Image 1 (tube, rainbow, N blue to C red):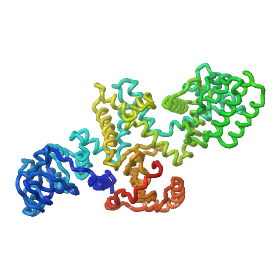
Image 2: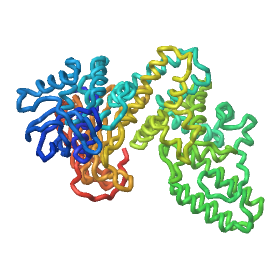
Image 3: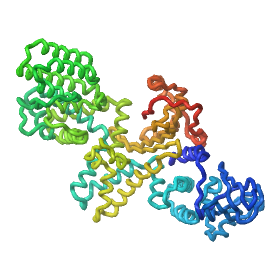
Image 4: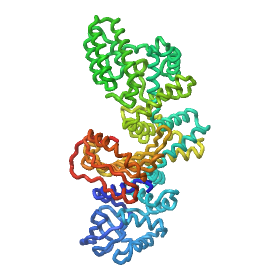
Length: 629
């Protein structure tokens, strides 16, 4: 089996939601329906799929017959004309399709017949113009795209009233693929690396973003390098040569000012007025800005911040509180406040550099990580998240390029630390990092008050928009950029809502330590009235293309908070590999108030994933938390 599209679920999704959607007819549309009941004045009840409506017929007909109808009017009432004879007089559906082709002067191509057969079975209205456009697409399908997938895409466009434009069709076709994103990214990156026609600033911005996507853990590697270099500067046992190399690297990477020396590099932040404490650097600023009469309030603030800081160990919290208690027993003066601030800075620098290895992917209650706290302790100006990431990436690049053995050793240790820190938090981080840097839905974030416009502007998708507006872009580069843009737009178009039912599709090109893979997620479920995900019922599919395990599909179904996981893979050995992981999965789900029903390992069978039913609500309970993948 090759998992090329999401059609099995989409078909079930459509079948489930179409019954709740009223049939909206437009003039000129053609559909296949059955006359259920006749009324006076040539009025009749027509059934199309599970929908029934009243319409006026041009000529009297017989109840029970099935016809192709064409809409001739909608105001003040729906008026229909018969395009084909009744089904009772035709031996096969194909004969009725041929009648339709003749009466509407449509081409009798195999593609047109397949198209009409599909919409006859789907019981959906379609106009003549839409039929002709769809036939053109079916005739010009690229290699590797099946007509079944194309028909499903055309059906979705008509159901969701999308414009019948080639860009929309191609985007939808591309967006529902479950592989190929990594290859598209690689091709674009290779062309970008060789290009000499683009402006250097645009090319560099694109290269940086492509690298950020290809290396989702580079910022964390930078965090580990930063912690190790700072440890060298604060460690009395480090050699003078190591200290000088560490200082030089931090200055070269823009983390320390050029005038920094071994004596003044950790010069304390300037005092600032009273503010809520979040970053470690604000602890120092608050101490320096405190007036003697406000010391009691300062002590309470410091103890409260220390207690809430999950990036510190209990032993470190105890040491900080002891330092605060000793200060609280001294006569308060400007001098004692300055000395206390320096002692606190040294204590926090030591704590956060030590803890980086164990909490590399951990954030505190304010979504701050180790690198954020460390930078705040000696940088005078605050950094935005995008600026901090740029600093870390620059630090890694400069460290890798360095010829100094000590710096090379630091990089090797940092990379090993990141690799050994791989867990669920690391994987979550990687997915979020890649999706953020792709900027697939950046348009939706532009209106937010908290939007980081600098970060958004540097995401890949908005930069692709800029690239495609260039007049001198080489044809190969333009084609590669358009393919990448089409794939991103397709994910957006394939995601969306149909009544209470929602579908979300994300494809993420991942690269871990030299190994590349395509990871695609499809979530189907419903939203509650308050706009939150109904966490009691959902279906989540992961399509993974991996170097070792090859194609893998994980089908996770949630029914009333009971979770069933089915893993499809051709490798029979993964049964034994998965067994030790089941207990951890069960415990993790239980922590989120879910119950694991079972984990099943199966080999691919074309019918297996299609036989799984849609998400069905067994009761209307609307409680729980959002599902986090």
